[in-house]
Length: 184
Image 1 (cartoon, rainbow, N blue to C red):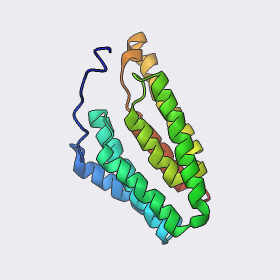
Image 2 (image 1 turned 120 degrees about the horizontal axis):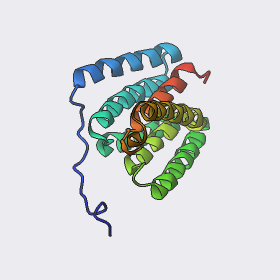
Image 3 (image 1 turned 45 degrees about the vertical axis):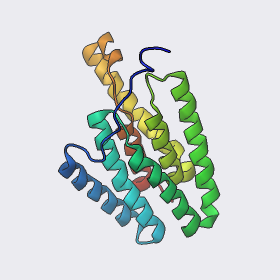
């Protein structure tokens, strides 16, 4: 057992330190998603989840942790809402949740210092919410984090390779982009 494996981390907080700012941005994201999708049961689920994505991303920026107490229940609720509100898309959402989660779990197993299990659980939430649209959301998020990493390398050189960049905000941004720009 390595010494890293023996480190016990405190659980992520349930609110970011800058909760007012995160709350305003979360409400704005939810409003934008509602405005884009119209008023329906599923668009309310999307809007509430969009707000949660912003909130959890703010926590990840500050603590480098994604709170299980928020992400896991939300995943179950979104999947249950999918089953209740649109049975025809439930299977798609469930399958893509598992596929995206499995892919990230494999990546986390191969590169545990670069990707955490919180990221895997966060991707489960995105799969439950977006179904097959999780792929473009993750592609956008990965491109965003790649651009930030490249900018850090250009500015700081090789030492930038040892920097930790939280993934949550970038994949949340990808999910928000898909929610706002896709033609459901």
